[in-house]
Length: 386
Ligand SMILES: Cc1cc2nc3c(=O)[nH]c(=O)nc-3n(C[C@H](O)[C@H](O)[C@H](O)COP(=O)(O)OP(=O)(O)OC[C@H]3O[C@@H](n4cnc5c(N)ncnc54)[C@H](O)[C@@H]3O)c2cc1C
Image 1 (cartoon, rainbow, N blue to C red):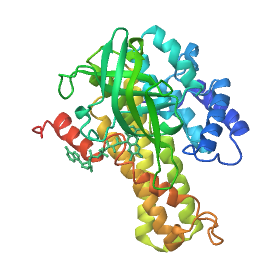
Image 2: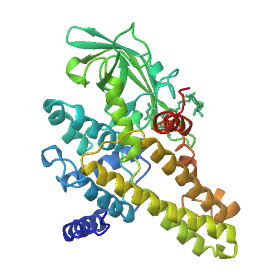
Image 3: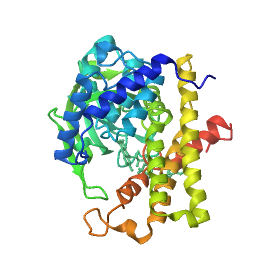
Image 4: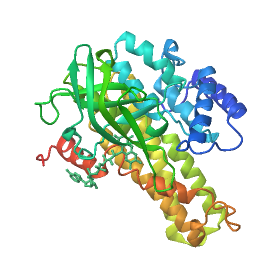
């Protein structure tokens, strides 16, 4: 494997860096889990899209730059390095987008991808239900055929950014007599359709981006089905592969956290504590290891490979690393870590506490780490099924 960048890739990096340095907002945007913040993030996304930076590996006709996944990794490195805003449409661009590329009809790609790239349409993910979390095959929300429509009835929950989203993709039971993984279909649902009710859920930090979504005989055209009827599990597993295995959490995010952690350690002269020094060094090394592993994955994909069960290894690694980095930062800060940003003595404390609260959810979302360990045991190690 040749780890050097080509002159074209260096030029691409320089172009991305120059644009980002000139355009990234000087002040952080309000959280995208608030109404004000969601609007500000949509404006930022529209600007990125207008300059062709929204999703660099997509074809130009869908709002991309026709680059490849290696260039996407380079773009992500520059994106995080310049402190650019978090992506409000991450469910769309990182999860549904690649799934649409693989399973969508030409009409669906042309209809949905450009508005996804510009975040004119923001997407929520509708897997979880009150009785179907880890056990996603227990999905009960039905979508029964009525002519050229599906009629939806039931409830989804924990839809991230669902409160401010326009569309939801999810799995629905289209065969009411089916069980488990069979008889499920992947549908694209407009959240403003009659019979759809979105109810925000307050998070630990009080913001209300999360939502539960109720369907009371909401009608969705059959044209909004992604992939074959009754075979939605296969489509959803491809989405989960992109989520866990590559796109949701690019290594640049963790490299940036590791850089900030090293700076925090230096600023606080924490060097006298050998255990702390080792913890910081380990976080930095692991963020670099994750980066190299991702370059390897991308090289494999560019050579025609696909993401498989190893995505579960990846998901455990990045979620546990993120948590460890935030825990290490809190150890460096000691009791000061608990100060809110507006407290008089909070200078230099940064947003590590807020980051830690979110990092706590890493081992839960995108499928809990216990479930990922089951996948690894059964599908990689070949151990007996549960
Ligand atoms: C920040 C955040 C964002 C989220 N965003 C979304 C979203 O956008 N869309 C969406 O659909 N969902 C979303 N979720 C929901 C998430 O996917 C679920 O919380 C997760 O799948 C676990 O389901 P559950 O909460 O019902 O827990 P449960 O399934 O009830 O699990 C409870 C505990 O039991 C363990 N457990 C369950 N079954 C097994 C087993 N077979 N073997 C070993 N241990 C097991 C679990 O690991 C967990 O520790 C989000 C969650 C969080 C925290």
